Length: 135
Image (cartoon, rainbow, N blue to C red; front, side):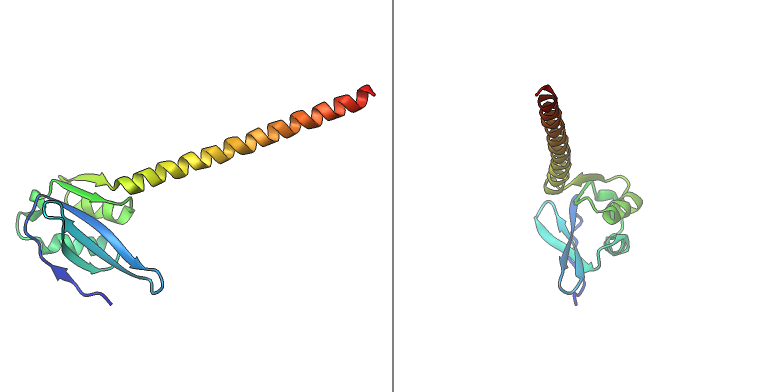
Protein backbone atom coordinates (compact mmCIF):
# COMPACT_ATOMS: atom_id res chain seq x y z
CA UNK A 1 0.00 0.00 0.00
CA UNK A 2 1.00 3.63 -0.32
CA UNK A 3 2.52 5.67 2.48
CA UNK A 4 1.95 9.36 3.19
CA UNK A 5 4.53 11.98 2.29
CA UNK A 6 4.53 15.71 3.05
CA UNK A 7 6.94 18.28 1.65
CA UNK A 8 4.88 21.47 1.38
CA UNK A 9 6.85 24.67 0.89
CA UNK A 10 3.99 27.17 1.05
CA UNK A 11 3.77 27.92 -2.67
CA UNK A 12 0.90 29.79 -4.29
CA UNK A 13 -0.61 27.08 -6.45
CA UNK A 14 -1.06 23.36 -6.35
CA UNK A 15 -2.26 20.58 -8.54
CA UNK A 16 -4.08 17.47 -7.35
CA UNK A 17 -4.27 14.18 -9.16
CA UNK A 18 -5.25 10.62 -8.39
CA UNK A 19 -3.12 7.72 -9.53
CA UNK A 20 -4.82 4.32 -9.38
CA UNK A 21 -3.63 0.79 -9.97
CA UNK A 22 -6.69 -0.81 -11.56
CA UNK A 23 -5.61 -4.38 -10.90
CA UNK A 24 -5.58 -3.81 -7.15
CA UNK A 25 -8.02 -0.93 -6.85
CA UNK A 26 -5.47 1.14 -4.94
CA UNK A 27 -5.52 4.91 -5.45
CA UNK A 28 -3.08 7.60 -4.43
CA UNK A 29 -3.85 11.31 -4.31
CA UNK A 30 -0.84 13.42 -5.28
CA UNK A 31 -0.43 17.17 -4.87
CA UNK A 32 2.24 19.04 -6.79
CA UNK A 33 3.58 22.56 -6.51
CA UNK A 34 2.94 24.67 -9.62
CA UNK A 35 6.07 26.72 -9.04
CA UNK A 36 8.54 23.85 -8.79
CA UNK A 37 6.64 21.11 -10.67
CA UNK A 38 7.39 18.68 -7.84
CA UNK A 39 5.18 16.35 -5.85
CA UNK A 40 4.79 17.93 -2.41
CA UNK A 41 2.29 15.59 -0.79
CA UNK A 42 0.66 12.21 -1.31
CA UNK A 43 -1.66 9.86 0.54
CA UNK A 44 -3.73 6.75 -0.15
CA UNK A 45 -7.28 7.39 -1.37
CA UNK A 46 -9.19 9.32 -4.00
CA UNK A 47 -11.86 11.36 -2.22
CA UNK A 48 -12.54 14.70 -0.56
CA UNK A 49 -11.35 13.41 2.82
CA UNK A 50 -7.98 12.42 1.35
CA UNK A 51 -7.39 15.86 -0.15
CA UNK A 52 -8.65 17.30 3.13
CA UNK A 53 -5.64 15.67 4.82
CA UNK A 54 -3.41 17.77 2.59
CA UNK A 55 -5.21 20.93 3.67
CA UNK A 56 -4.88 19.85 7.31
CA UNK A 57 -1.12 19.40 6.83
CA UNK A 58 -0.60 22.94 5.54
CA UNK A 59 1.14 25.35 7.89
CA UNK A 60 -0.87 28.21 9.34
CA UNK A 61 -1.83 30.63 6.55
CA UNK A 62 -1.16 28.01 3.88
CA UNK A 63 -4.77 27.84 2.71
CA UNK A 64 -4.84 31.58 2.20
CA UNK A 65 -1.72 31.37 0.02
CA UNK A 66 -3.37 28.99 -2.43
CA UNK A 67 -4.35 31.05 -5.45
CA UNK A 68 -5.07 28.25 -7.94
CA UNK A 69 -5.64 24.51 -7.83
CA UNK A 70 -5.57 22.50 -11.03
CA UNK A 71 -7.26 19.11 -11.20
CA UNK A 72 -9.25 16.69 -13.28
CA UNK A 73 -13.05 16.89 -13.25
CA UNK A 74 -13.48 14.64 -10.19
CA UNK A 75 -16.29 15.88 -7.96
CA UNK A 76 -14.50 14.85 -4.76
CA UNK A 77 -11.54 17.16 -5.38
CA UNK A 78 -13.80 20.01 -6.47
CA UNK A 79 -15.78 19.62 -3.24
CA UNK A 80 -12.67 19.57 -1.08
CA UNK A 81 -11.19 22.70 -2.67
CA UNK A 82 -14.47 24.64 -2.53
CA UNK A 83 -14.93 23.78 1.15
CA UNK A 84 -11.37 24.20 2.36
CA UNK A 85 -9.81 26.77 0.00
CA UNK A 86 -12.73 28.85 -1.30
CA UNK A 87 -10.41 31.67 -2.36
CA UNK A 88 -8.46 29.44 -4.75
CA UNK A 89 -9.40 29.39 -8.41
CA UNK A 90 -10.14 25.87 -9.69
CA UNK A 91 -8.47 25.19 -13.03
CA UNK A 92 -9.44 22.02 -14.86
CA UNK A 93 -6.83 19.90 -16.57
CA UNK A 94 -7.07 20.64 -20.34
CA UNK A 95 -6.78 16.93 -21.21
CA UNK A 96 -9.98 16.11 -19.33
CA UNK A 97 -11.85 19.16 -20.66
CA UNK A 98 -10.93 18.26 -24.26
CA UNK A 99 -11.89 14.62 -23.65
CA UNK A 100 -15.28 15.69 -22.31
CA UNK A 101 -15.87 17.94 -25.35
CA UNK A 102 -14.68 15.23 -27.75
CA UNK A 103 -17.00 12.65 -26.15
CA UNK A 104 -19.95 15.06 -26.42
CA UNK A 105 -19.13 15.81 -30.06
CA UNK A 106 -18.82 12.10 -30.82
CA UNK A 107 -22.24 11.47 -29.25
CA UNK A 108 -23.84 14.17 -31.41
CA UNK A 109 -22.03 12.85 -34.49
CA UNK A 110 -23.43 9.36 -33.87
CA UNK A 111 -26.96 10.73 -33.41
CA UNK A 112 -26.76 12.72 -36.65
CA UNK A 113 -25.37 9.71 -38.52
CA UNK A 114 -28.17 7.46 -37.26
CA UNK A 115 -30.80 10.08 -38.20
CA UNK A 116 -29.29 10.43 -41.68
CA UNK A 117 -29.31 6.65 -42.15
CA UNK A 118 -32.97 6.40 -41.10
CA UNK A 119 -33.88 9.34 -43.35
CA UNK A 120 -32.05 7.83 -46.33
CA UNK A 121 -33.61 4.44 -45.67
CA UNK A 122 -37.09 6.00 -45.61
CA UNK A 123 -36.48 7.89 -48.84
CA UNK A 124 -35.29 4.78 -50.67
CA UNK A 125 -38.11 2.58 -49.37
CA UNK A 126 -40.70 5.27 -50.30
CA UNK A 127 -39.14 5.65 -53.76
CA UNK A 128 -39.10 1.90 -54.26
CA UNK A 129 -42.75 1.49 -53.26
CA UNK A 130 -43.76 4.42 -55.53
CA UNK A 131 -41.89 2.83 -58.42
CA UNK A 132 -43.58 -0.51 -57.79
CA UNK A 133 -47.06 1.08 -57.80
CA UNK A 134 -46.42 2.76 -61.15
CA UNK A 135 -45.73 -0.53 -62.88
